[in-house]
Image (cartoon, rainbow, N blue to C red):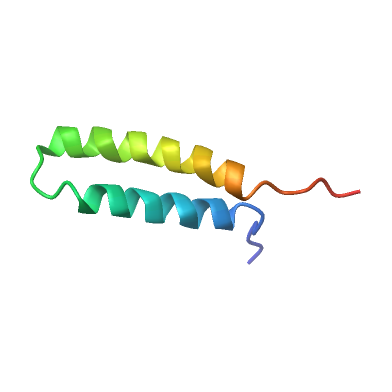
Length: 58
């Protein structure tokens, strides 16, 4: 099985970021929780992209 490992660090960071954000909102409405998780995923991906930028291969 061939797995693309170039973005695994960003994916793990995003998952952890969403987990922390959702953990602090345990008693919210399900729709609000879904919206917050979606926004947290987007923000986590942007932060992960900035933190784990790959240098161009020459």
